Amino acid sequence: MTRKKVKLAYINNDSSRKATYKKRKKGLMKKVSELSTLCGVDACAIIYSPYDTQPEVYPSSAGVHRIVTKFKKMPEIEQSKKMVNQETFLKQKISKVSEQVKKLKKENRDKEMNRLLYGNLSGKMNLQGLTVTDLNDLTWLIDQNLKDINKRMEKIAKDTKSARMAAAAAAAATVPPLMNGEVKVNVAANSAATNINGHSGAMQRQRLRGDSNPQNQTNINNNNPMRFGGREVIFPLGNNNKNNWANNHFT
Image (cartoon, rainbow, N blue to C red):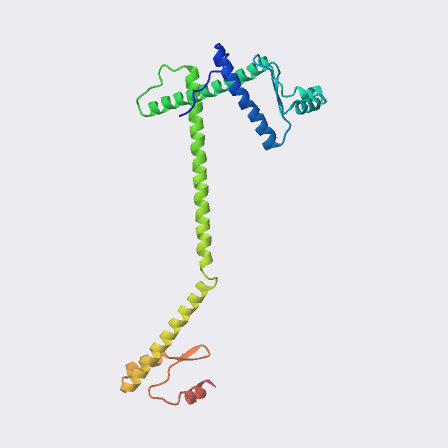
């Protein structure tokens, strides 16, 4: 269970005030001791109260005297650099609270304009009866929303482009550099071998059958012509001396 927040005001009841003094004094001395021990800094405390004849000091009278003497040796500007009186403290507190109030007013105004904008878009509210200030604030809110949307769209487009480039680079890295060229060469070589083997096989099958059809023999010769000087020469049917015939006519 959390402790109830104590109101920072003078305690009118004497007994309650004395009990609070003893409890808070003990806590203050403990905090000064922890600060000095944990952080290794010179710290002291001097407390005067109507309940004690002598002031209570920390860590000791000699220690307090040493620290106070060290403090007095500092320049006056440094001595009063972080010191505040009651008036200065209240001014700082008022300034801080004013900033918080200003921030809350701005947040409430933004929420009000957002409610008006979305209510108008949904058809539940209209813009009639708005002041010039309200219209200006609503225009500013619309401009801010458009800027945010454009920034998001640019970011999404940039991320998409980067992802596509990364995917393309990864795909290119998995394919060997000469793979496409090698495949084309192999396919062309296989096609040529297939054509040659197909023609040779047809001729051999016709020879084994003893096909004496002149038309078939002519087709075979046409499929395997002999070129001399850029001209095709088809040998007569049944001529086994092709080389001699060619030498007699073209030498």
